[in-house]
Length: 189
Image 1 (cartoon, rainbow, N blue to C red):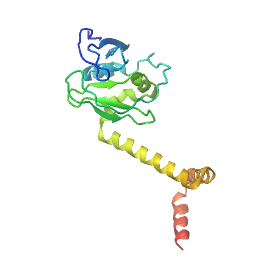
Image 2: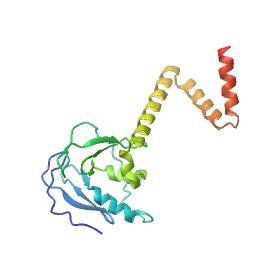
Image 3: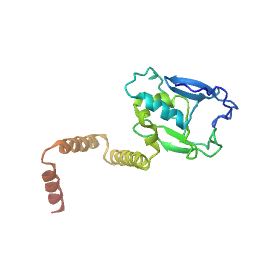
Image 4: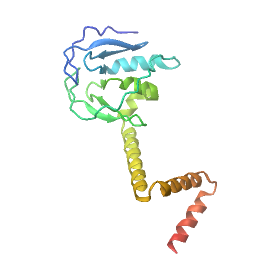
């Protein structure tokens, strides 16, 4: 169910190119693409139409593109309703920030971002990225990585590996509570 978007005149939020052109990236999924920067605008209703047809369909869109994470800097204007786009961290190891209009719910993907989401399987629930629980999980992942980096810096690589190995061992042990209790008790006395 492809809709004709070819005559839509919107400015690219990145390079301000005056016309975005229709690009079909998958069966039932049309996006508007900037020919200058390669970014794509996904209208909210286009995503929901595509999602309705998605389940159980094999996709050939999983390109071999290994793009680097885009710079999360800069203000972007919605090409559809001219409001500011808000950045959301995609998380789950993608290293990407997705821009979304909170007014019309359209989504801007910098060059190759949609393909990267397709490869990471996050695309099935793109709208979940914008939920507060998703964003909290992304922040928690960042805090965990930061703590890990601090521990590595403090202990050095050899001792850090010992601690990580012990943590992995203890986490799988059927009597983990007893071990932790024993360690806490003996360290305090």
